[in-house]
Image 1: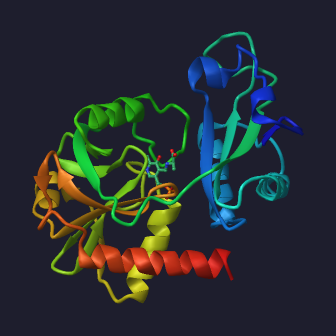
Image 2 (image 1 turned 120 degrees about the vertical axis):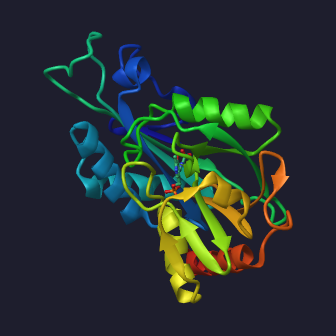
Length: 278
Ligand code: PDD
């Protein structure tokens, strides 16, 4: 089920102009919200980040935030119980010109699709990729080509996810997930800021780590540190908390899902159950 510029329709019936700036320039922003048993997880946080992305790239808000929330709730009612909601806003259709059109009518769409949780035994193998993205990765824009190329390189290298490494050797995040390492019982992750997307799942995991008494350091860390970590894991709306047991083919720690990661995953799921399943 799709909502496009004011109407609900089956997803195949959605039509957007070939001059839409999202299509021609990647001139747009997006969100992915997880739905558990018919309840969206932290919808408010996603809508706040959508607003930050819109403001960051100067696209006018297509609908009042309460209307966007209502669209999400309606899609949840019409969609599968365990799903993702994809939201996208572009700067709309206009004759092609790099500068913004005078009269901006944003294209707003949202749709819902089924999602299944990864099996518990699934772990990621990571493949490192140079982080060639721009310096505003906190904005969730649809200009994802560097992420796509990195993910494809990871998949072609036999991995599950690409791990972005900056020129100075620091690890920023995954192509669609945030990165965490555990060393001597401490949880270390890149601080929020323009170099990463501040994941909704990332924030939830930091909360459960505090609840669990796991000390947290939010600071940049080097790939060399990641390789010597006891445990490593990735987080994201679709990824949830995913153990990462190999980096470029080499095992992290003993190459198995780590105990702290599993504890945090269990605590994260409890948090989801509490918020979405009452
Ligand atoms: N991606 N980092 C990047 C670059 C991302 O694209 C994502 C999410 C995350 C994790 O953020 P969150 O926990 O809010 O999902 C981190 C979505 C899921 C996607 O592009 O499909």
